[in-house]
Length: 393
Image (tube, rainbow, N blue to C red; front, side):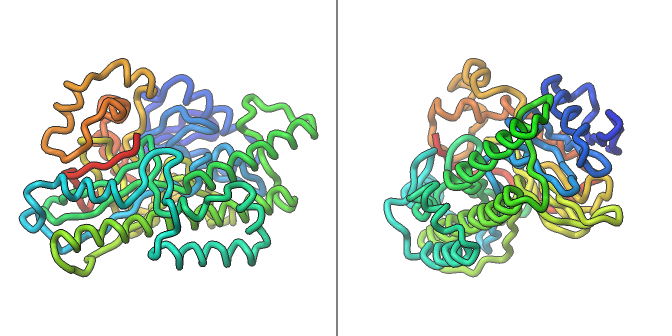
């Protein structure tokens, strides 16, 4: 669908009447910040979020809002296509699920007991970059166990799946971010931004709009740490994917992967749009340059997609990152039962647990409608259906 102007500086791919009131207030407040460039772009999966609306694109000039980037810096997706088809996988997929659960720490606060051999080169890469930036001691003080976090999933809507595409090819597919170290980096800089607003008597409609200005030490430190945390998130997904592929090879025989796709959906980059170099922060949104491949997951039990970007200029080359929440976690837990779980997850190998009731499809927007509303932003290349789902409580 074509976008609509829902305010002086807001271009939306979701009709205004479908945007919840709390999210609309966030969007309006954000769009009025003096350093917004052109307009805020709103994706079809937008919903109220901490710091800023999830599913928004925030183009800025010489300033950045740490809370708008969010606390799960670099959160995103990775998918690996294998040469395997459904008939090459075991009939009983519970062995694969349990192997994944044993090899990858799940849930908030659960990390590797020690640095795995496969993770060591990635840790060394992050250590070298941090040392070069003069930030290694800072990261160690923020989180002494950040090295053990690399290769861990987390909780909430993070997941690991084995999926089949429309031709029954098996893919390994996962969603995770920068874990505890990313959260602590973000929280540190959000607090600094708020302190600066108080120091300079800058009144904002929402404290989460507190910002850092370019050419200041606070801005430079945040951008340095943001870049490092985004790299941590990317390497975290790579480490988990290496373990998953080895599990599949152990169960199904050695193979070479066919294709690999990776994308952030909570991140900031320096980009060039409408003739100007700017910062683009995508909060729950993926980059979708012309021809660029991306991943848009649905919720538990629904479809997910491999897409190719169309380079839509008005969206700042962006597309949605998923289904987007419809119900809060508390409301979802009160609304659904294990009967709903069994119905929605029929045919999927999954840990049957009440802990996941807030992740059922009814808690999210209709992913098919999100994709329909994204027709100007991306082209669908593959449609996934889940056969194994792994989550952290």
